[in-house]
Image (cartoon, rainbow, N blue to C red; front, side, top):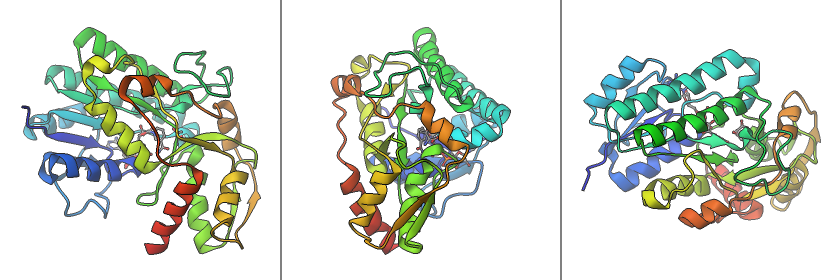
Amino acid sequence: MIRERILVIGASGQIGVELTLALRKIYGNNNVVASDLREENELLKGTGPYVSIDVMNKEMLHVQVIRQNITQIYLLAAILSATGEKNPNLAWHLNMQGLLNVLDIAREEKIYKVYWPSSIAVFGPTSPKQNCPQQTIIEPTTVYGISKYAGEFWCNYYHQRYHVDVRSIRYPGLISYKSAPGGGTTDYAVEIYHEALEEKKYTCFLREDTYLPMMYMPDAIRATIELMEAPAAQISIRTSYNVSAMSFSPKEISAAIKNYIPEFSISYEPDYRQSIADSWPQSIDDSVAGKDWSWKPEYDLDKMTKDMLENLRQQ
Ligand code: NAD
Ligand code: AKB
């Protein structure tokens, strides 16, 4: 049996913190090396090894992969949709070169498995709005979406040509209470819970009827680990899997919060993120993930709202 040594790149981010903690529970604290460009997140401190890595510095990354005897890499460093539109060159550069650096090192060092997330942002205005299928018209209009779609095909290429076992999920908007989101269009669905508790009101940057696919972080972490633990023979998609959990609008999440905080109120001031949201599907068909590795979500809007508010109150 292989003794796994896992490197998480971008470990101080919204997903990275929770994924690192979850992987440490499974593989042992010392076998999961957290890394990021920014400083170690408070929640990770004291729970396992941390190294400072810039994924754009291929040499430095390569040295760490060898030095730490890494067998699996989870690459989470990226620039998300809203920040990407402010700096398209930087977003393209980091999202593409970071991935190519990791895939190249994985090929050279015979890294056993690589995980790299894609996003529902690959879909564009010409994709079906409802139950958007795994394979369909994909014409993204954001730099983030373009970089994710190109990245999916690089993953497929490295798998086919070099047999790198790289696996991927197209996450919807992720909602969590442990670490803050990092510049996405779906971030409103995290901010709203904080503001509901602190201010009892929230001004949303999307229109009230903007439906988007969303997922609670425990489901996203479980999906990631279930995909990575599935036997390779079951993985039919080497670009990236659609996964789904729930879809709601700002009006609906606000109503769900009002069930617990009756005095909560919401107002709307849509900004440049509205057109990004409008270009994405409203719901996702994840039947291929269900068939291949038995994917099934656990959280709906109400269950997530209850859990978010309980945990944020305790913080
Ligand atoms: P995030 O912005 O919260 O975290 C990214 C982390 O990468 C940050 O801690 C940042 O410091 C780090 N980073 C940036 N540049 C780096 C570099 N050059 N070298 C090393 N680290 C660097 O993002 P996230 O929400 O945790 O997303 C992680 C991945 O999941 C990304 O690929 C993102 O596109 C994807 N994703 C996220 C969501 C979501 O809703 N959070 C949805 C779909 C896909
Ligand atoms: C974003 O809004 O950019 C992300 C995503 C859906 O990829 N949350």
